[in-house]
Every structure is written in structure tokens, then in C-alpha cells.
Length: 282
Image (tube, helix red, strand yellow):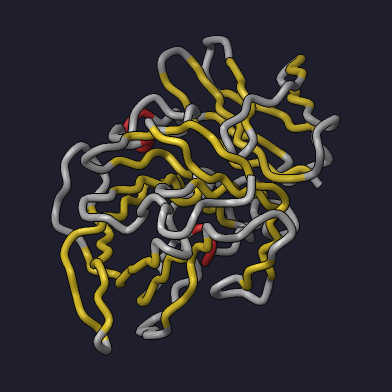
């Protein structure tokens, strides 16, 4: 798949576009529970900066309704080339924030093809496109770019939506001790959800399971799941694209050592409650 004819890229920067991303922060102490939170980003309104027209990006309150939030930056795109540009602060928690930064960054380039390279907008790591395909997703045929963007984490960009692995700002973020993954995207015409989740608008914090731990993390692929509950524990494992990963689970030990090194999402379920863990296999 060699891309689109000139002028035919589906727009990503459009009024009412709303991205929900789940953020996990795990510090170096394996006995500490990681922080889980949802973050939502909304495109609403117009602005002009240095004579250039932009849409305004807001960080809004997670939940079933759109509440007032913080304006964090400006975004524009060139639909003839597939390039998406961002000017402003990268959100705190979601990325290593750049305060009061007025630089315009190339956030996405959907005109790239297999073997092409794009510089990371914040960190000095090149993004090298591994493969490109055309997929039918959210009611339209869209260009999809796949690549490994740093030592552990792969990513997938979908035309008109952005990263369906780590969310809107994925190209400008680094993954050390932090992880974020795409929950859902919606606008007036489209709704697309990561299959890991059951709903775009139910905060994970509201249904999260307590009294469950996983260690060691990182590990060689064998993890112990400890539960304080008397009910049986159910475990599921996904990669960061939402694909289910085969594993064994015997006597509270989960084994994914036959999988490639990388980052995996482990969902632990007890009764009607669940909790997602970010695990790293070296």
C-alpha cells in the first residue's frame, strides 16, 4: 500500500474530535501499586498564531460528559500531505511536559511509507516505518502505519484517528516508567474503541479492583499474581495494540516467557471487578 492520491487523506484535526487515553505510572519500587488514570483530549474552537490557522486542543475532565478543562495547545494539518502539526505543551503525566513551549512539532505524517523515517518530535529517537496497510476501520478505508518506535514499544497510526496503541500524543512521548494506551476516539461521524475496554466513558478508577499485586516487574516473563480475595482470579494478557497474548497461569504464576521482550497489559479480574497492570518482560 503506497498511500493516497494527493488531497485524499482523511482529516484527524476536526471539531469535536475526542480521544480518551488510559495512563499508568509505575515507579521503581515493585511493592507500590501503579497509578491509573484516564485522560481525555478534545478539539474545540479555532485560533490564529503567527498568521496560521489552528484548532484548539483541550484537556478535559474524564467521565461521561464533557466538562470544562484546560487549553493545552494548538493543532493543524495539511490533508494534501497527511502531516499533522502540534504547538503547545505536551500534557503532564501523559508525557514529559514541555512548559511554555511555542515550537510547532510534526506530530504525525500519514504520507510516510515502509522504510521512511520521521524524527521524534521531542526525543532524539527516529521513527522508522516498518509496514503500511489499508484497513477498513470506523466505517472507512484508512491508511495504517506500523513501527517500533523505541526499545520496547511498537505503535500503530491510523489515518484520521492517530495512534490506536498509545493515543493522540503518542509520537511526542517516552515510555520509561510510564505507559499510556488508547481507549477510544469519537467525533460526530466516527466512534472507535480499543477492544481491551468495554466503554469509552467509564473511568477505570470507578471499577478498579484493589488488593491485587503482580511481581516482579519487570521480569524474565514469569510473574506472580497475589490476591487478597477468596474468589478465583482470572487473568488475561494483551499487547499494546489490544491483541490477546497466549500464556500459562498455574499456581498464581503467569508465564509469557515465550513472547518477545516488551511491554504487556495484564488484566486481573476477581468477580465483577478488574484491574489493569503494565508489565515488562526483558
